[in-house]
Image (cartoon, rainbow, N blue to C red; front, side, top):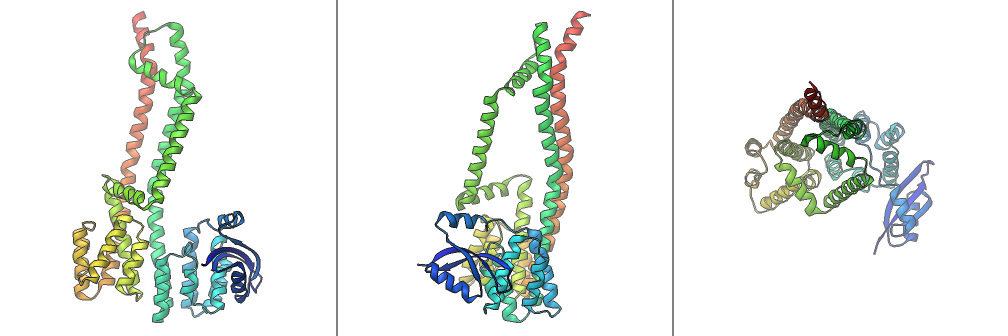
Length: 406
């Protein structure tokens, strides 16, 4: 039975390479690496402590921006007529992501050993998604690799644009929420105790709101509270992480997100855009419909929609058209279904899917912008209300005391 080994080596050109390989034994792994002109400096089995340490050096994710830059540069060089080997050399020199550069060196070595570009990329699933590998394979078989690489760069750039828009929409609300929480903690831990001492000396009868605020303020000085809160946050985080690792828990969380009143519609549109962009790009690149659906199910990033894609594949095997199971799934809007039906009837399914992707991506961006604009004033009002409530609770006894003196 083949085992997994992690290795570090030097290539024939002297560059540093790190990766993994499956082999029957360590001697077989060494022999296989030597046929690729590697000078092996370390080889560790995955099940050992040293193997775990070697694995930890390879799990750092490649930055999405680095992948976008690689595919854009690589596509430009190949389109200009530069050989694949020379194009990889240039992109490796330009890459500023060490993890990606190591993977590309391994890809270059595999190509020099006789593998195709798609087969070499497929050996690095952590760096290159199955979507891009399938598109490259179709481009190689159809003799249009340069066009496919351009299309991959376009898909990745659109994905990065959506991620940036999401990050920018959530950045300001996150800053305001963090500032509000910090301000409230500061008031409760530093300002309110001063008035608590004053009221205790004056033996005032405190309103329920003020008494509750002083109780909360005293609790913030108790180490047990912070220990309890820290343990609760850590426990909730571990529970969420554990749920995300299991297929059932991940699907349950994603179903809940799709049903949320504000976030749900945006998440559904984003999933439909991802489905249309992925499937349309694969079909445009020459991938067969059934194979394209298999890759789309893995790349869509949502368990609910991935399950619907699996049902689509089953329906197609039974002779159905694509539009009918889409409508029956209930996960896709009627506009989406109708345009897919038109694309099937006119033989322009790939073009129609890419148009749908453009439409839904623009819709998602507009929804995110609207959501960000709506959240900002709500957070400001909430912050003002919380601070106003704290200030009122502090000063109400003073005003009551001054009024009684008069």
